[in-house]
Each structure stands twice: as C-alpha cells, then as structure tokens.
Length: 356
View 1 (cartoon, rainbow, N blue to C red):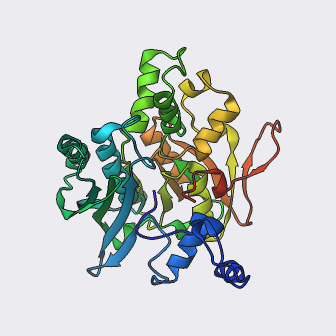
View 2 (cartoon, rainbow, N blue to C red):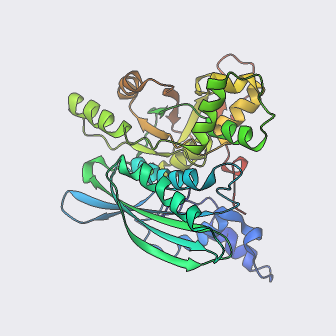
View 3 (spheres, rainbow, N blue to C red):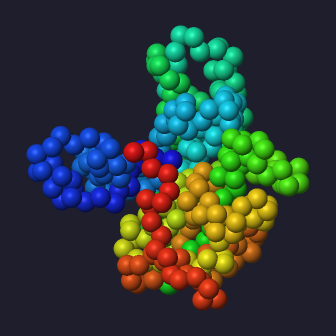
C-alpha cells in the first residue's frame, strides 16, 4: 500500500525529457513510480520517502501519519473479501504502515465514497471489520467524511506516535547489516488465488487451505514485533536507528526501496526466503518464490539491523521469521543461490503490482 509519503524510482530529468518530446504526458506513459516522482516535488524533501510521515510534536516524540486509499475492484471485491474483510484489511494496511515506522497507533479517520444504491448493511459490515481490527490496538475511528461515488472507495488516515530514537526509516540501513523478514511471504497471494479459483488446490489439507485464505482476508499488522525489538536494544544497551518498511507491496519491493533510500545494495539468499510449505503443494518452486517476492499484501516487516541483533530477533519471533540476506556497499540488489544452481537475479520493483 502507498502511504501519505511517497517512494519513487523515475528521475525528474527523465520526466522532463518525456515532456520535452512535445506530447501530452498521460499517467500510463510514466507509470505509478513516475507519477509519484512528480508529486514528490510538492512535498518537503525531509518528509517524503517512508511508509508514513513523521512530524515532531515534542522534543522526544513525533506524530506519525499514513493514508491508504482502497477502491472496489482494485483492492477488494465481494468475490474475494466481502465488506467485513475489506474493512479489516483496510485498517490492517494502515496499522502496518505505522508498525513500519516503529509507531504506536492512536486513531484513524475514514473518508468513504459510496453510491446511492449501496446497501446500508455493506457499509455497516465494512465498519465492523475496521473496528474489529482497530480495537485490538486501542485505535478508535475518530471521524472522516462521506461522499457520493460511482465506485465504493475508502481513504483511511491513521495516526500514531513514536519516540524520536525509535523511528524506523528506510534510509537507516548500513552495509553488512542483516535483512530480516518477520514472517512467511507468498501466503496472501496464494490465498487470493484460492478465492478466485475455488477448484484450485484441491489437494491441500483443509487447515492449509484455510490458513492461506485467512492470510489474504485477515492479515495481522506486525505491531507485536516492536516491543520485542525495543527489548533487545535495551538489553544490549544499544542506540541504533533500525531501517525498515512493511512488505505490503512485496518482499522484493521493500528490499529495493530500503536499498535505494539508504544508498546500499543487497544480496538476498534464495533458499532463506520464508515460504509457507503449503504453497509448494499447489505451484512450482519458482512460482512460490515469485509469489513470495512479488505477490504483496503479506503485511510483514522487513527490517535491517546488525547481524547479532537480527539473530536474537528471529530467535524470539519464530513463526517463519528469517534473515534473508544482508546489505552490501555496492549498488546491485541481487537474489543469489548459494548452491550455484541458479544464476544471480536482479530484484526489481516493476515485477510486482503497479497501478499504471
């Protein structure tokens, strides 16, 4: 999901060159990342580039703000989620962005666009789903707006708070630091496939099938990781600025975004990427890997920190958390295979979902 702050990979010079060709630029000409590059020009340079905006409100505390918009037919549909789960996922996506910044949730506002013939029950179920997710983190809905819209649209803004020395940013990574995925990847993509094609995966055990579907419909924002992380740092008496973001747009996207913001490279070990075993019962190993890297919407955290602290973190977290690679001092962002079976492969944002 895209937050109130934007990330980008198309240079302003490239966009100016397109404009100079004498044609009227359309969004489809420049793509999602190109559009974000243009919009970034309207924002303070020191604010944009993370999962959420961080605004200092006190000497040692900051307000964290993130916004996600969801559109019927793009982010959800009654075919795969229904209103309750659409609401849950909408709330979870915003809370995940707060977790990616190291922030504690405070509240959310919701702007809802619906048509006049939208069922009242649909709206109520949507809000029940949001509330069920938010209540676990004591983050109430404190306001918003409603408008007429030809398609159901929800724009949610979440507010959180973070201590200045606990703020997680994409730009904090350092060469030789470990890259941690806090859980398995590819489950949400597999769950979506099972929902879209009920005849698919008939060989799966019922519990595995349900688990994958729940991963898509009912994701858990990894706010639980933060107290574990702070406890480790306090026990070690270490003052370290952790790097990270969430993996809502895919594990590969998160790694590339962190590398670009931190001006480092990375080597990701193919065999260390945590993929649910059930997935390889229904697709090939290569497809399972692609879903893990580029499927998106797993809502795990991708964190970069010194190797000794990373080892302690995954030992405590368990449940599929893993060190998937390390940062390097070169610019390449590579998927590598220690067995030598597969050639090195460059990780690219463009292989994941793009809006345009």
